[in-house]
Image 1 (cartoon, rainbow, N blue to C red):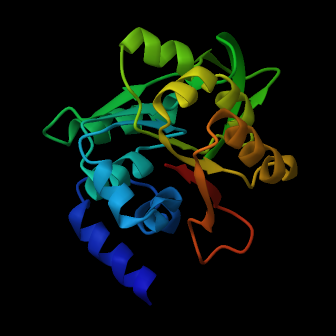
Image 2 (image 1 turned 180 degrees about the vertical axis):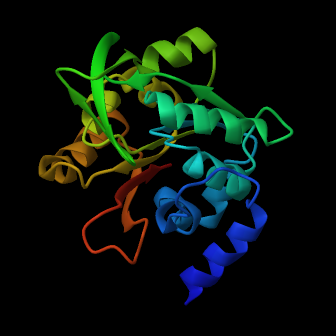
Length: 221
């Protein structure tokens, strides 16, 4: 009941936006970040966020309204989703959400993806996309990263490998999807713990109504 009431309030607040699905994992669970300690949530105000797997902007909008960041770099490589993401970002007066039509991995390259509604997967043929790394992007933009939210259909481990230097340097809060591949549940936390021993971890379902999806690993200091 609490979740339904929360979603109803949010729908009124963002009815002008082009959102295809008012997902509980984004607007209630905040990609898992709802369960961060309150002091940590407050510290994210005016921060720099990376929304990796931004889809149509639902998660970026949820983060914008919840945390009041300075900038959200919203990465979405799929062209149709990206066009909607652009429209939604322009409906915010401040230029907070910055859409980036690129994917993220462990190396910069060109790949092909197929798109199925909310899920885009790397394939041998399909829509050509450009891919970069979080390390390269953050260094080129000369930014300190305060938060990374990541849900990219099983490519999370590679994107984290490509963020190694930034994670070690900035120690950002993390919300990482760990339900797409069984090994991610065991490997990603261990790898992050090696990079930043100070990290504290929480595993939460961003959507409590889903039995098998939206399991997120949170890391913070």
